[in-house]
Amino acid sequence: MQKQKEIPKICLINVYIGKLPNYFQLWLDSCRYNPSIDFLLFTDDKTKYDYPENVKVKYISFQEIKTYIQNKFDFAISLDAPYKFCDYKPAYGYIFSDYLKQYDFWGHCDIDLIFGNIRKFLNEIDLNNYDKIFKCGHFTLYKNNEKMINSFKEMIVDGKPMYLNVYSTKDSFFFDEWGKNHDGLLNYWINNDKYRVYTDDSCIADVSTKYNNLVLTKFKKRHIFQWNIDRKNNCHLAGLYLQNGGVHKKEYMYVHFQKRSMSCDYRYANDCSEFIMIPNSILFNKKIGKKADFKKYIYPITIYNKKYIKSKIEKIIERKIKRK
Image 1 (cartoon, helix red, strand yellow):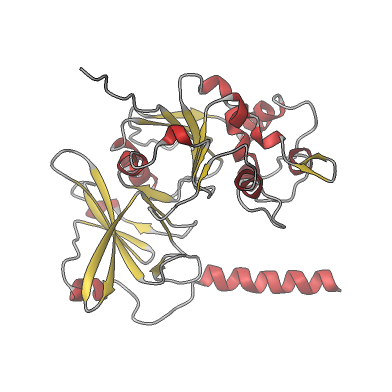
Image 2 (cartoon, helix red, strand yellow):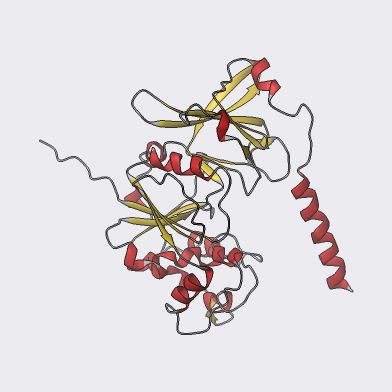
């Protein structure tokens, strides 16, 4: 009898200092229905939530986590604000190695998202053939070996390791992705024959920050997302959109809201086994079946997101100040 192939053990890490999102319980529930994957959350928010068994929470203050990370390096690090944690994500395997010894893959993920059936999509990838899975900081996996644990140290710029500059400077370098000036680790990994990177992220619904409607960064259609649990107790996340006069559906591994505010009123939830995500809101016990249902919940015209407009204005002002 042929021996069944073992499923790689995975742990995803998140460091979150500050008030957790108002729909955080739904994030936890979407983790609950991915029981074969473990999550490790470091946070200072001690609000009572219904944490599932596969989500381990470590309560820690900002100063404590800063000290913990500082002890991993032999030079003075810069970590003065929570946004800087993004630059440290590629080093989580090194920083939190004591928590990861039993796993085949470690990674990091964001909290401003809702998961669908993660394993369904990962099973379509031969994980053992890759050192790194996906290219965006909101969900990335790394093989748990010495090569990948220390890979963040190997990128050399101007004759010295790039991480020394990134981790001793208060600026945000987007080190886990492309980088400000294409000096992020992603370019290094992809263009280096030493690393095998899986870059097909078509299973990810990454919502653009530009519009009020839920428009994907790579698929310019207005979307509504539907999350539900089937009879076998598996969760599913579907993106719904209009095309050729009808409502079409595509299943995704997760939807990423990119820090978008989403109102969520649990008083209207009989249970959390089914809900829809519309522009800036999460609604319970609702279904989208017909075109009329879909149109009821979306903006009929293109409306730009206020946060996007504000950020654009701030960047223009910043450039003018620098020129002066």
